[in-house]
Picture 1 (cartoon, rainbow, N blue to C red):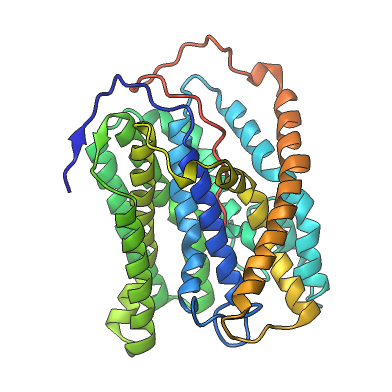
Picture 2 (cartoon, rainbow, N blue to C red):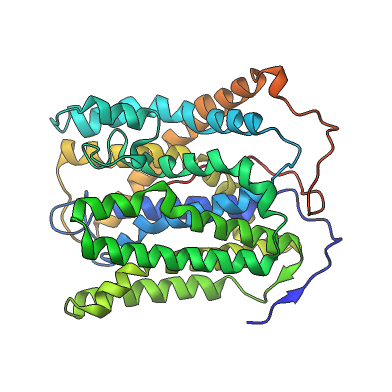
Length: 398
């Protein structure tokens, strides 16, 4: 693959709308995974047209982690105080999380007639449930917010490591990213071979394990800002993802358990991270040279903006629907139900974004302590030229 150097004096776009739109498709894939379940009698209904491939939607979280690292560096302001950054992140992720948490508690505890382990539930309220072993159930509170537990560690570290990362040469960052992804593979292998299934599962969700994925996103953003370009049409990485998904589940269905299937599982997260990075790269390169496509349409951009609220409520809505009406027949007609439910959840997500998420974030920002604010004319020391202003990076979703 040919890497070329672009003009580093060119002004980068202030918005990357294609990435906002991609968040919607990633969130929709996660929803499809929860809707169809894992087989058997899980999920609300299963369509042979998309199952078992819809299970790959669970790994849409990896896309969001790569995207989070990318956007954090893309909008990085060296002069910003760490406490200011942390304050803004709290205002971005916590309000709608706390507002939607009662719905999740009703869906996954009250309606499910499940016991509440109050310590574990409290850890989910503060989004640290992924940090500790022995949490009950494995994904307490709103199950999907385990990803925010991962993001929280990245947010805590970002103001401390970003000034260092931006001073490292791109090739060394790339090597560190690849080494980190290799470590994910090795840790997955070791955990499955040496720990109980419950412990291995906790290890593979631990926030520290995903730091290489964030670093990959950061490295990609810096490479683009430093002028690195790779001729890559979006159809190539998207097609590669489709072929990988098809091949993965064909092997899973047809090949007996053994080394091949095990290694395929161990390399799944690193592979998806690399494919996510290539998808992001392909669309960003198009946008920075002024090429606009369907992902730049207002509707998809708005759906992307609403996707954080979408992912916070989609699993609870799907679960409550199952309690109310029972599972749908496992046939392709269930796709109409999937699309209808997605439409309803998007309408609810619009309301949450409009009346909770955005107003709460604005209110929170205006109440930042004055001593934490960064003067507009503060001098920044960075190895890079000034970065374009971009909308606040969104939290990851699953």
